[in-house]
Every structure is written in structure tokens, then in C-alpha cells.
Amino acid sequence: MRDGFSLGAYSALLSALRERGYRDVEFQDAEPSSPHLVLRHDVDMTIESAVRMAEVEAGLGMRSEFFVLLRSELYNPLSGHGERGIRRILELGHRLGLHFDASLYPGRDGGDLDRLCAAECAQLESWFGIAVRMVSFHRPAPAFLGLERDIGGRGHTYQPRYFRDIAYCSDSRGGWHHGHPLEKAGSAGRALQLLTHPVWWDSSGREAPAERLDRLAVEQHDFFRSELARNCQPYAAALKDKFNKG
Image (cartoon, rainbow, N blue to C red):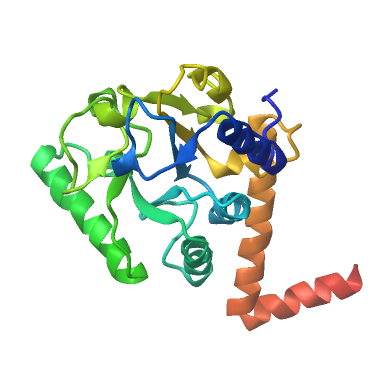
């Protein structure tokens, strides 16, 4: 079981960090020796959960950075549904970064990856009218962890100044595998990068990771059927007839 992941628990965590003197800042403004809190969200599976997390943070007067996949089989940030969610996040005052999946470009060297990453960033910038200043690698290969140089002309979240010079916590795979944030916050005055994945926190706090993903699969199946009905009249009529008979 996870350590009570829910939106309420996330709000309480942020409040506890603030009570310890932490202040949310952008990546570029983080000072290792200051109680700075860099809030990062890798949106791996669902934009809806990201919106809910963005609303919690905005309610606390805090701002974060949401990294979205441009090329994913699980969601489309440029679809009507996806775009509305991301624009809501931006309206709340949060920032948008690129979640770059380098595995989609096998065999490419550093120069090619720079060009491809820059092209994905440019597409997000053009569509949403914002500047993408940071990149986060999706399921990063070991070579990207601690990589000093920029990628695609932007800084990235695994550069040493964000990944080693300051404390780092992640809820990857639905648990704290780099130590609990409040334990890391015990390093007096040290800045902290807090990585969360919104899907884990959009939960009752009692679901195991696999249970949460099973529920997401059901939700996405229902949404897909509703979109099929919206786009195909015979299917909509068949669903209505099935419902009436049921």
C-alpha cells in the first residue's frame, strides 16, 4: 500500500513544507542553500488528474511546472479535451514543460535528440502561446541522469544543479523511492525538487498503484465510448437502444 496518496494528503504535504519555511520557485531560481521548493509534475497518464492537482496548488497560492508528453498513446495534449485541460492549468498560473520520451527515437545521437526535442518544444509553444523553458525525460535512460548539458536548447530536470546539488524526491511507481519529502526537508536550508505524478494522487488514498490504474482504464474506456457515440450516430443510437432495453 502507498503512504496515503490523495489530493487531501498532497495539500497537507505542501502545507507542512511551507510551515518549515519552504517557498515554491521556478527551476531557474532555485538556490541550493535556500529553502526553495521546486514543484514538478510528470504527466504520464492523464491530464484530468493534473488539472485537479493544479487546482489544489492554486488554492494554496502555489505554482508548479507540469511536463506533458507530446507523443503518447495514453492522451493527446492537442486534442480538444487535452487542450482544455492544459489551458486550465495555465490559467491557474502554472507553467508548462515538455516531457520528452527519447525512447521514441531509437539510435539517434545527441545532435538528433537536440533537434527533435526542440521541435516538440516548439510545437507546444506554438499551440499554447507560451515559452517552454524546461524539459523532463520520460523514463530516463541512465545516461540522462546527471547530464550536464541542455537538451533542445532548454534546461532539463536531471541536470546536476536540480538533481544532485539540491534534494530530490519522487513518487515514481506510486511510492517514495528516494525518501519521504519531509525527511529530505530535514536537511536544514537545502532546496528540494519534489517530483510527483498526478495520477497517483487523484485517489482515495487507499488504492494500490495497480488498483488506481485499473480504475483509470475503466474511466478511459467510458470516455472512449462516449467519444465514439459523439462521432458516430449509428453507435450512439445502438448505445441508446441498449440503455433503454436495460
